[in-house]
Amino acid sequence: MPNQLAISTLTLQHRISDNWAADPWAEVRPLIDGVDVLKGVHPEGVAHSCRHWTGPAESWPLRVTKEPRRVVITEPTCTAGCCGALYVTMRREGDRVIWDGWENTSNITAVPADIRFDAAQYEAELARAAADRSWEEPVDTAARLLEQTLTGSGWFEQWGCVLTGVWPRREEPDVPEELTGPEGVDVEFHQVQDQVPGERAYSYGYELFITHDQPVEEQVRQLAARILADDPRKTAELRER
Image 1: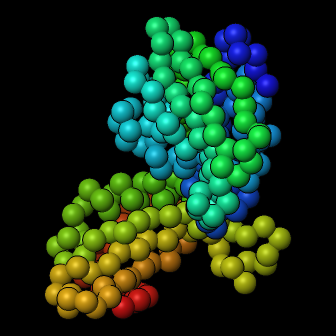
Image 2 (image 1 turned 60 degrees about the vertical axis):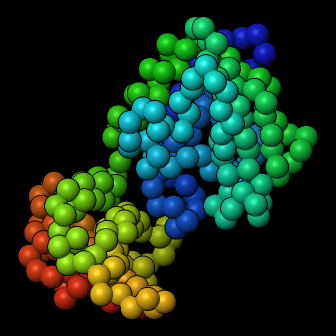
Image 3 (image 1 turned 90 degrees about the horizontal axis):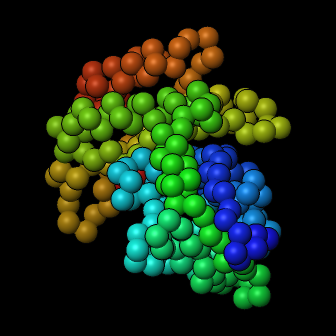
């Protein structure tokens, strides 16, 4: 583990979790001097999803200010209350970023040493990782672009509905495609207008497919056009009431 007085280098690595069914988006894994230090003390932990890195810099999970912040840096795919999580307190002091005050609620004895970073390198790496799309597979790009299109359209609101989310759907490794279906994108929305008080809302979804013989951007345009062509409650699958 890094020496307390050493100045370490932060690298943020996008990684698809082995248990991607729990969260199909990539986690953004912090490496310290090229080493996954957190894996050694909290092996079951998953870092923050790339979904948490899409907003303004003030919302990024690893942002720092002069005021210390206690952050969940890895947690299991169930819940922190179930299997424990790894916490760290991070702050900026002058030209240094400091991670200390570690707490491992799944193992009270296993925590990293205090870590210091050069603040300029640290903040540059946060900005680089937030903008990084090189890790994306076609399903990730399709899900991201389709969500942007649907969110900006205001289409679901016209029909008294709310877009719940858009997710990539990956192929299961070592499982025949006929059992899992081809990879693609899942879209889910629910109805809020005309809902009876106390009754569960109608939930709808699209199971869309992505091919490898056509540009992703063109496929997204076609998928969006299909959804935006008519009342989505008529063309989507009714999943839950």
